[in-house]
Every structure is written in structure tokens, then in C-alpha cells.
Amino acid sequence: MEALALEKKAQRNAELRERLMQLKKERNAIILAHFYQRPEIQEVADYIGDSFGLAQKAKETDADVILFCGVHFMGESAKILNPQKTVIIPDERAGCPMADMVNVEGLRKLKAQHPNAKVVAYINTSADVKAETYICCTSSNAKRVIESIDSDEIIWVPDKNLGHYVSQFTDKKMIIWEGYCNTHDQLSVQDIMSLKAQHPNALVVVHPECRPEVVALADYVGSTTGILKYCRESSHKEFIIGTEDGTRYMLEKDSPDKTFIFASKYLVCPNMKVNNLKKCVEALENMKPEIYVPEDIADKARASLERMLAVAPA
Image (cartoon, rainbow, N blue to C red; front, side, top):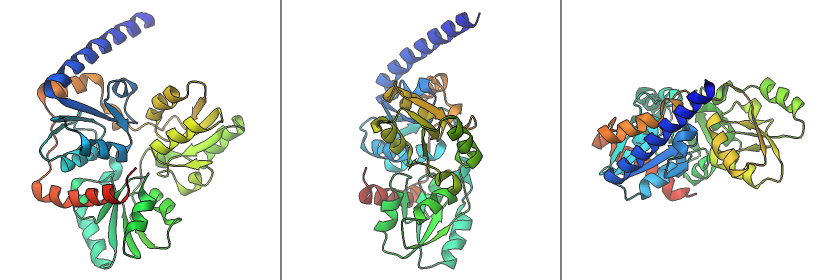
């Protein structure tokens, strides 16, 4: 019975993939997918990446339509960088709790309290917040971005864990917002230590959105792309992974001879996982949900993204 169900699912996915490819050609569309997306979406994407890589690819594409398989702020960034293109997402419910933890009113108040500070916003923020920001960054380029700024005082929003990690590599004063990633912040020292006891030869690799005490236990700390590269190029065969479960697809694809043990069963972002193949097809059929960013907001936010792309290329 289970085998029959799996066979039907595989057949349905094959039909959806065929329809998606047809629509992509008709719409002159490109499919961008974050590493945290379901494997079925990563399999059909034209480009798979982390926030920085996806921002670059969105900027470079000559497609008329961008189907962005990620969360809402990512679609906004693509629209900001491509105001003349149509940007759609599979499911408008795909939000980011961390992005929602910082708001324009609170940020403006903090800026007033520190008039000499420059605002650095993690790309995991809304367009409205980016519009209040001097420069954006991602986990892969945050250190370079911080050092590029001609100010000794930085307002950092919204992820306190990434902010703490970056602060260790600069002498600049960092005023850090109290936001966090609901998924990465769940990972505990006990989770790591328990698995390390069971797999003493495994290397621990974690994302800097994890808590500082977890990051301190890692053999390698880096962005999703950095983690993938590190595991791919390492001569080690066993890794304890401290980032979202969606990376399993690319880790195993890159290194089928290696073992990847995810540090917690809770390392799953429910917002990333609301997208699926059926919704991708429906999005291209109906050309919605479409991402809109008001022109005045987009112009200001674009400046912060362009500064990031200029000073911190991959």
C-alpha cells in the first residue's frame, strides 16, 4: 500500500515538473530556490543558493518573470533589484519570523538615539526596514560589510546571534537588536554534546544564526553556502550539521560518500516548507501571488542592497 502511494506521488511530481517546465518556457521565467526548500523544488530550480547568491542571481537574470521559492523578504529583494520584472512566490504565507522582529518605528527610534551610527541590516528583513538601512549583509559577507563602513558605531538588525558572532571580528561598537531565527535558535549545547558523544569523530558545522554557546562548540561556522563548501572539500567523512534540514539535499548530492547527522529534528523552517511543486505550477499559471514594493520604499531599499553587492561580492 505504501509502495503504491509512493509510486502515485512520484508520478504526480513528474507531471507537475513537466507542466512547470512548459510554463517556465512560456513565461520566460527563472526559478530561484533557497537551500532550505523541499528537495522537489531544488530539483527543478535554475539556481539554488543562500540569500546572497540568490540576490546576485536575481540582479543578473534577463528573464521576464522570477519565481522565487523562498520566503517573502527574498521575493521583495528580487523585486527591488528588478523593478521592471514580475516576481512571484509559490505561497504568500511564506514569511520570516525573524524579519518580523524588527519594525520601522523601533529602528527609527534607535537611530535617533545613536545619530552617528550606520545601520547594517541582515538581508532577512522587510523592504520597509531595508529602506531605513545604510547597507545590507548576509551571513556570508557580514564581516566584510562591517569593515567596509566608515563609522565606528553600527546598529545591527535583527539577528542577535549573528550580530554577536560578527562582533568578535571587529573593533567597532555594535548596537545589536534582539531578534533571532526561530529555527536555528532552538539548537542547544545539549543537542551538540549528545551527538558528539555518539559520533566522536564527526566534525561539528553550524550556522552563525545559532546561539553563541552552540557556535563556540563548532569546528566550522559559516553561511549555508560556506557549510556546503566546507563539507564538500573536507577529507572527513562524518559531520554533525547545525543548520536547516533542507541543506541535506545538496550535502548528500555533493558528497554521497559522507554521513550527515542533523543536530536536531527541529531544524526545519516551517515557512520555507510551505512551498511545493503544485504551488509553483499554480503560481506560474496564475502569475500570482505577485510581489509588490512601493516605489519610494524600493528606491531607498535598493541603495542598501546595491551597496552590499558592490562592497562584498562573492
